[in-house]
Image (cartoon, rainbow over all chains, first blue to last red; front, side, top):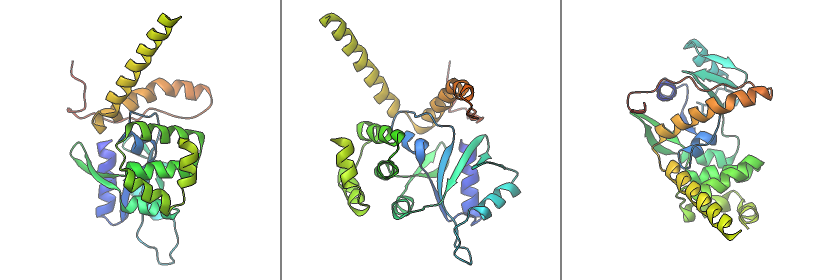
Length: 165
Length: 67
């Protein structure tokens, strides 16, 4: 996966991406026990297009030019199917802005904070998100003060209470 | 009956300890574990009609398990 992350960093250097951070199951795996997933969810901020249009096409184009294949909703980058997701609401925008810088082996990268991954799972609300909330609650070292702030800002306190009752 | 419950409780406790140990592994080691899970799970998913495959990632010398 290191090569995959090197490609993402290269896209940032080339200004194809403004920033990115790992989310989804692999983001959660950073904090908890390994979780089965077949793709790597990467939240991305693209430089503003002239019309202000939210499209991943310039990113796909840059990846195609580097020889990577777009397969349905993912792009296979160095053996890893990567799903790019734009931050489609305020919670995701905040999560991306406050993502944690880390290293994968020798390669710098960014991962969403555990508190944001938990809030995103609460907001998404599927069965597998309940499981993710449970895992993060049990195994991640959560900053509860920070988490409470996130839940309040994004009106997720009721669901948090409901899911943890 | 109590003895069975005690045995089961010990097994669950050991399982929980292992899960917490896994949670504390370095990220590259966890990714390697995910790829192992993918190799185990992919045939089952494919049998249910979902097109999935284990990641084809090279492991650096640091990532390779030592024997």
